[in-house]
Amino acid sequence: MHAAARPEFAIRDLLHGRRDAAVGTRAHDLIRELYPICRSLTGEGVRESLKLVQKVIPLDIHEVASGTRAFDWVVPKEWNIRDAYIKNARGERVVDFRHSNLHVTGYSVPVRARMSLGELRPRLYSLPAKPDVVPLRTSYFREDWGFSIAHRDLEKLPEGEYEVCIDSTLTEGSLTYGECFLPGETTDEVLVSTHICHPSLCNDNLSGVALATELARALGDCRRRYSYRFLFIPAQIGSIVWLSRNERNVGRIKHGLVLVAVGDSGDPSYKRSRRGNAEIDRAAVHVLRQQGFEGRVREFFPHGNDERQFCSPGFNLPVGSFMRTPCGTFPEYHTSADNLDFVRPAALADSFDQCIGIFEILEHNRRYLNLNPKCEPQLGKRGLYRLTGDVHGGGKVKEMPMLWVLNLSDGDHSLLDIAERSELAFGDVLAAAHALEQCGLLKEIE
Ligand code: ZN
Image (cartoon, rainbow, N blue to C red):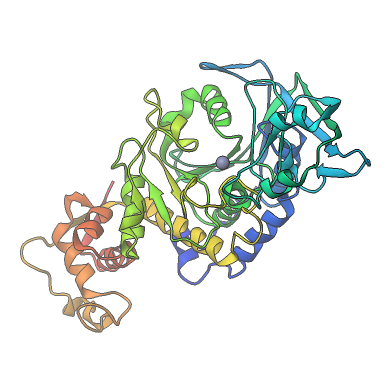
């Protein structure tokens, strides 16, 4: 049997002319498809969502039984919901789950009752400061029930008797997560993780789900030095469960990114790993700095998304977080205003490019040795000047990157070291290294 044909292009080619122009639109279309589904930490909504992702990329869907221990945590009961409403005395739905799944507190226990507005009122959650939006609310670890409602609508509710129904189940079941593994030339891995537990909210975090899906689709067609592992998990408990089941293999994870809030029109941003200066941190910072976004780099802090677990001291994995506007800092965050209009195809496409730019560095960051280190080699007689226009550009391979690569390729400096010190784009440094290697002036160090 023949081995599968070697894909003809590299991950970096996705940045250089081969990137599918439809990537942003396709990501937005997937968000639109996922948007109406009621997801939570567990349940059919998560399964249904993962099955839609599975239509695009090869995804293994795992089930972990309720009650399974994971370090200091236990997999919770499975929650499912069919319907929920509050009806007024005339039998009209004044709050309706069918209109928005945000109306029900996530993990609400089943309820059927009649009560006065006074009795119901403590169960109604609104944001007086943002009177037009329905806020997200969950009660994962305490059995409870409630409704979210726009404050403006809450204030309009007249006194009287209301009928309350939450047609949900909270039973022994399982926690569901998805995993897409793309093997590379080495078993060393790049981990990409995104959370899938939010109901109808787009930037946090259907944008992450859609971007991870498009990245996995694109990387699936490329030659890969690293193996890539994409996780689609419920936030926190999902990464805790995954780490507890995969502890013996986490040493393979050499670099990692948590993707969250990647579809809004803010500038890209990056939160460093706990290590602070891991290769993933340096790669991401280099990509942002090259575009003038160094002010969008944040230090690690032990709060936020699944990096909290990946960067817990017992693992301390080199996992940073790529975002646009960070969670909690945009007014639409965790409300019904984080909707299909808030995420943009162009922003999703740009997030795709930023991530590929980071992967390009990881894939190609090697050390080389200058084989002609005593004074500069003559580039002209090797035809390298013919490739160049002037010192800073014009031609395909630029002169300044060649001079930097020759000067710093003493065995101690990687191409990323050179790009950082020269403040040149990694892609230019890489192109220079390849040109110098081809004419025998440079040798890769294993
Ligand atoms: Zn969130």
